[in-house]
Every structure is written in C-alpha cells, then in structure tokens.
Length: 357
Image 1 (tube, one colour):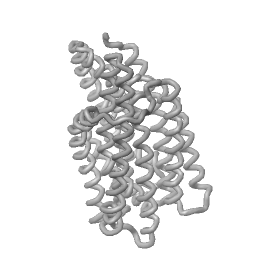
Image 2 (tube, helix red, strand yellow; image 1 turned 90 degrees about the vertical axis):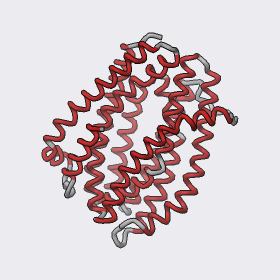
Image 3 (cartoon, helix red, strand yellow; image 1 turned 45 degrees about the vertical axis):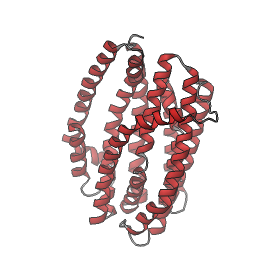
Image 4 (spheres, rainbow, N blue to C red; image 1 turned 180 degrees about the vertical axis):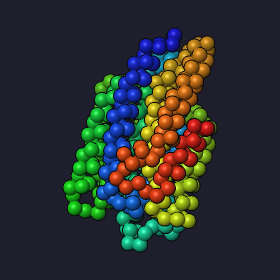
C-alpha cells in the first residue's frame, strides 16, 4: 500500500475548508456570546465547561485507540473485526457514561457547589450549566465511534459538508440567544445541547448509509476490551496531564481572583483552539495512512510520512503563531467588542507554550 500523496493533499484541502469555516463562525459567535452573556457569565461558562473537560480526556484516549484499531482492520481488509471494534467501542462508552454520571453527581457536584468562586446570585445558573454540560458530554461520547470511522475511511469531504451545517446551527444559536427573553447563560447551554443532538443524528445517518461496518451488534469481547483499554493507557496519561494542567490553571485563577479573569483565560483558550485547528486538521490527513502503512509492514513509507508530517507541522505552527503574537492588540481589538483584562497576556503565554510543546 504505497503512500497516496494525492489523497493526502485532497483530504488536507477538505479539512482546511472545514477548519476555515468553523474558525470564522467560532470567532464570530464567541464575540457575540461574550457581548450577550457579559464577562461574568462568560467566565462561569468557561469555568464550568472546563471542569467537565476534566472527565473527557478518557474518551479522547479511547477514540484514538479505536481509530488505530479501525485502520489496522482496514489495512488487513477484515470487515468483521472492524464491526466488532465498533460495537465494543460503543459498549465501552456506555460504561464510561455510567461512571461519568456517578462521579459527576457526587464528587463533581460537591466541588461545583463548595469550591468554585461563583458570583452571588448566579449559583443556580451555574448548576444548570454544570448538569447540562454533563449531558452534552455524554451525548458527544456516542458520536466518537462514527467520527473515528469517518477519519479511518478518509471520508474527509464529509467534514467540509457537515461544517456548513454546524456553522448554520451555531449562527442560529447566536440569533436565538439575542431573540429569546430568558436567562442567557442557561439558554445558551440548552441550545448547545439541542445542536449536539442534531449533529449526532447526521453523523449516525451518514455512517449507516456509507460505512456498512458501522453497525452495532450486542457482544462482549473481553480480549478486545483489554486491547482497547490497554492501548488507550498512554494516551490517557498524556491527555490527563494536559487537561489537569490547563484546567488546574483555570481553577487556580478562579480561586484567587474571579470569573472575570476566567473570561480572559477563556478568550485566550479560543485563540489557542483557532491556532490548534490548523495543526490538527493538517495532521488528521496523515493519520490514516500512517497507521495503515505500519499495519501493512511498509516501514520505509511509514517513517517517511512520520518525518515529513513532523517537519511540516512545526513549520506550519511557526508561520501562524509568530504573526499572531506580534499583532495581538490589533487582532483582539478587531475580534471583540470588549476585551477582558489580561486577555493579551494569557494569549501570549499560551501560544508560546504551545510552540515550545
């Protein structure tokens, strides 16, 4: 299975179209949401949402494992094994959802009620955000096997089309947020949950129609379960450390300062996510052939791809970060109606740390 440079280029182009559209919509909606919610409510949303992220690193590790096993099965042409992996993935996410509910409604709820610095009078809204965010995370979990399958099959053009749909939904959320007379913070998380359910349905329909292996069957394979969880172990350590680091920053800022500082940190995180989209989409185009070339034993092609993607990834990141860092004042002024205090400083630190990382 020789490296297909034309397919990589085509997939990269489709992913970049998706990224540019999502980034433009995300930056615009962030501007409107910050202006509509206000600095304090925006800080609450980023703080609570960040706390939920603490539970999500396990799911990201399992997604990486599923995608790897999908690619190996595709490299071997074993469709039956592919379907077993898909079904076991759903079983694992169901178990993880139960675990998430147990922890979230005990330790997590205690932490939100007693340890977070929430402005007086917004405690009830913060609890609404917390509960709805847990449900949204669980809903997202069950999209991941379909998402991993689409990437494994290199159906990158699908992302370009679904991005148009996602962009329209996000713009619709912003419009409804300014139109409906209700608590804006609670309304926002409710609308976001509804959008997540709708997008999940589109993913599921596409996979059932275009990827026959994406069909759930009731089974339990102990050996496959151990392989998936074991392979996820290193990713869990890496993801867990990264999430604890980023969200630990958020909790410390909240403990010693206020949700207004969390709002500034949240805006900086949006800048980081926008830059990260460039790199993630670029690397996603390489991943399927990286794994498939390894599974097929074609190590020369595999190492060539690893080397090429590593060099090009860093150069791409450097070309993006340097001009952004030197023009932060102008970019933030163009983007936001009101720039929270310390936003520039947080952006500068986060982007340089990302470049070093």
